[in-house]
Image 1 (cartoon, rainbow, N blue to C red):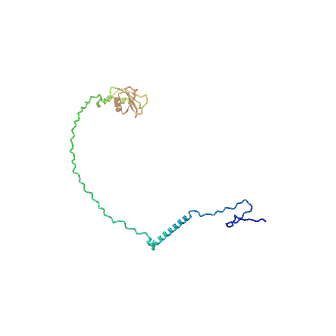
Image 2 (cartoon, rainbow, N blue to C red):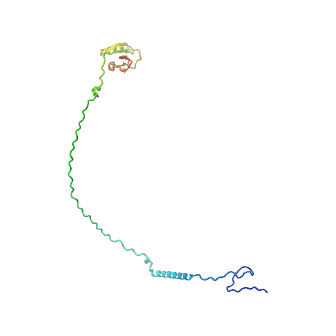
Image 3 (cartoon, one colour):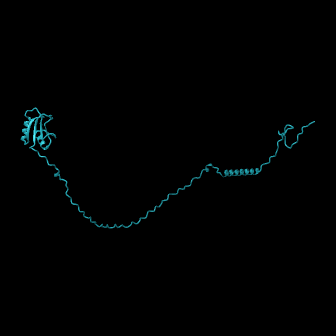
Length: 223
């Protein structure tokens, strides 16, 4: 008859002991854990720190005043000292320098300016005002004057010719006008303007320059 043989062990029975018979599974290895090194030193440090903390708290509570009002900060002592009158030293009057003697003015030597001879004005060829004035043209009473009647007035040319002759003019012609009639009595001239102006002033006409006219020509109109 077969019997299950179970080995005896010094350890209590656990789940690792219940294994199927005749299997290849090995039992779990058991090992006793040893206390790690240095654990005692750490515990000693912790205990020493706790004791120091307890001593500090107790000292603080024992030394603290019972009246909480006395815990206020002490009144500040008066640090402001009485104002000290600063003795301002008056600046000592400085000795004024003696009066400075002004230097005597030095007379500058007079420098004689050299006399410059002005050049004599040379006579210029420019004519004087009297020379620039053109000589006035004289009235030529001997100049022949022709008088023509361009109006409807009978004998008008002969009447004006007689008037001019009485003023000293030479009037050889007195006839009727057959050309273009001017708007008013006109004295035409090509030369000797002075004579033409004198005739125009005598008969109450205007003088007009006309280069195609020979001498002085008077055209009478009703105006």
